[in-house]
Image (cartoon, rainbow, N blue to C red):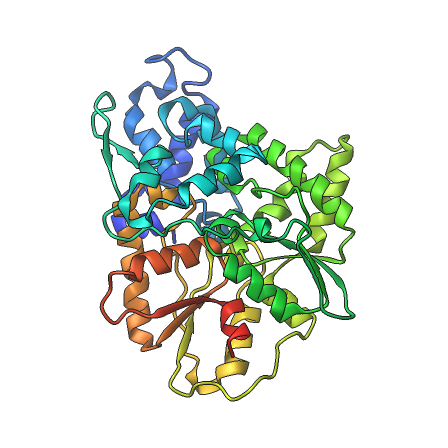
Length: 405
């Protein structure tokens, strides 16, 4: 079920409702008729735009669609056709993401600003922009959570030749992703320690392209992907591992950005075949360490990322690892979206909180002391959403849990 529909129960957020609205925009609406004319004239513009904006791109609607309609793709196309209405992040944000110089420079500058001040988000222009009157936008900071500060020690900046040769084994290239590079570099370091073998971090890599791709900014996504193709083709890796299910999902989409005649499509397809979400590679390489006895007071539950459930073949590897490590101390939790959705939680803080509240309730029913996940966005959402919760859980990436066991 669509997480937004689950909390609002508005028909326009259901798969059927989205499809009808998108048909107005793409099939016969504003893109092919003057404003106020044509078949789309009876659809309230704000409601159409709001519906498209309030999509997490989680994939739930397409997963349950009985006829296999790819609603995620339809929403992306509609967003691309209507980006002038505020459905996308500011254009200059894409320019920063594409720049290998500006992104780390900006991150360095912002690292000195406390995450709780809200100034970072205002400077980036990523505060909530919603108004029932299109001509009177207002700005509201996310109030439900403490946003983290940027890490002062970015993973890629710790060592220009970042790579670890811990012995024989397959050659593994680490895809960092933005969150692990700039917010949680300790997760990337834990992954390297867990995997062993030859783990390399290719220089020149950047954003996977998911934010731009989800916003319908296809050309920006393509430019970001081309940067990564150059970086990872040189690595000659047997596997590409990432600690973020969303990044892994996006890497598998890379070939779709290129035409059949474009030679980059073959490179993208080769890299897509090599990518593994962390837990899957741990299982594939039998890399789960057998370390000393664990703390018997720790109980663990698992939050399954949407992209892992719907795009990467399910959550069996992650839950299997936790069951093997913790046995009866592993408390399975129902699977639903956490409400992060990349830029969604920044632009829709109240709606994101309503979705996340359901996850808090699910966690409380498990009685677990620790919540584990395998997606950078989910990790960010859980840590931010529980920061002010008295008696809240400890929130870890699976690599951190394994590394500390």
